[in-house]
Amino acid sequence: MEIRKAKVQGFCFGVAITVKKAEEAIAARSDVTTLGHVVHNPQMVASLQARGLKNASSVDEVESGALFVRAHGLPVEVFEKARAKGLEIIDATCPMVTKIHVQAERLKADGYKIVVVGDPQHPEVRGTLSHVPGAWCIERVEDVAALPRASRVGVVVQSTYSRETFIDIVRALSEKYYEVRAINTICTDTNNRQSEAVALAGQVEVMVVVGGKSSANTRHLAELAERHGARAYHIEDPDELRAEWFNGVRTAGLMSGASTPGWLVDAVEQRMRELSGTAA
Image (cartoon, rainbow, N blue to C red; front, side):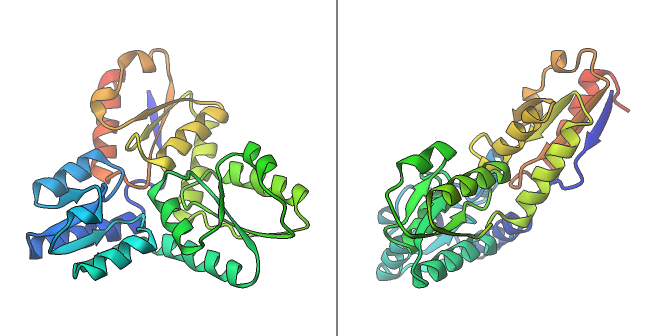
């Protein structure tokens, strides 16, 4: 079986920066706490926790030390509460996420009603909404019909969102509102991976996408592969692979989400070769 790997693999630059800052922080001190997982990858999370990174569900649980801000960022009010408690803040928010906050604030200052496209429960989206109080958040094209009236709407989008769905939503908004100003804040890495998913899906019979099950960008890659002709499997580690997935398969694709370390992709590739009988 031939395995065709996507050109873009491993961490995106934002996750790489976040992981590096987390490793430096826990190497320098023993009282570093993050709210939620640093990245959407269980292996990386376990590694950081084993080296001393603590996890809390709320800033109220952090009484002292340093608060590590993960790649998704945090709501404005959480930053304010952390400062009021005297916590040191180690801000590793992805630059692409910060860009979304800036763009949304500019649109609001220019008089637009803000629409944030993305999963309202995703930490990145919650952070963005805190920068533009009163903004509307929608996740699907069908949500547009339920939005109230407005004359001018300004649109930003979750950095890891599906490009195809975002385009459909902007089209629907443009049909409903007199003036729509949409800024494509999907990050470059996400765009590149999604383009590769579409291209690779047309070349292979089966696509294996490696990444955390809670990772939105990884999930979208698997959905794109399915939509464009490949039988797709979203897995977190090599043990999830099944030999029957590759029975009679001549060409398989392999790609990863933005929070997936390169060594894990290599391990999955090796296991795919073993299961298909093509290991070196």
